[in-house]
Length: 376
Image 1: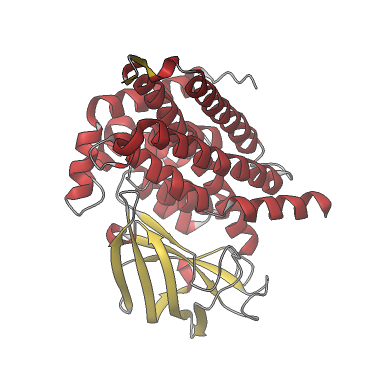
Image 2: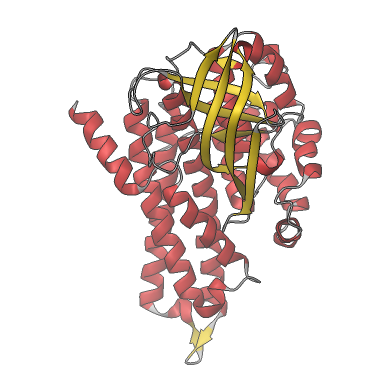
């Protein structure tokens, strides 16, 4: 697939790429990971003030760059290349996408805060029993006067340990798995009654189990209508999934390039292992997986505003998930034992590619979803 970016999009990619190449080395990343903070506020500040990329997908009326899904794709691919752990995905892509779609006073107030780097938002949607069903919710919001009271538990909430806000899916009516009765709230993470159990994730980030106990929330914190938010949630999850696919393209590009370089240098039986035909075939297969992932991710990104959104995203995620597994496992195998060492970058790229396989739905889940969508 041939796709020519605009001058502004090319400049965006070059700007992000240069900054990350200059300041976000693997060693610097590992210092942040090993510090226990799992993010670098100085990097986030630079994203906002020096680069302006936190405003990439937002309108100029809100102080953004006037971009959209393609701009998110560009930034996320560069994030994948550098293994960036800062919360662009939950804050800008997912929460920002929800606010853009809903509009209103809450969006007008929070989007400028996102662009300025002051609002960091974690997406609290997964529950232990829910698997990949976005409507399977036990976290409840009950009407209490002019506001609501939240009770429940959200699992594996990425970026929650340092988030200023939580974007929370709740059940405000109907049965546990009903499509109706689902609502969406954007609330301060410091509200009374919210507790967390924080932990590191295998890919260098941090997440939390988040518990809500009689958390009082004003009606002004609701995004969309009461009980009718599931279509919006499905939309932002699809947008997030497409963005994760773009991140995977960056991750797998580096895995392939790093493995190719290693195969040229590592010698066995008096010659570089890259001279052996079996290794050459494997490297070509890895390259093909990466290029196919890039093309199908672009297709899904361009269809996010169409009726084919869901099917395109599931097609992309299933293909990208397979690419992550194939490229990641072959990169480690060709590197040998050092491929899983903590000191070598390839092992950390492999960990991130493995996490991406299951993020927002496994390969099997998206194949089933795609089949259902095209048959229906």
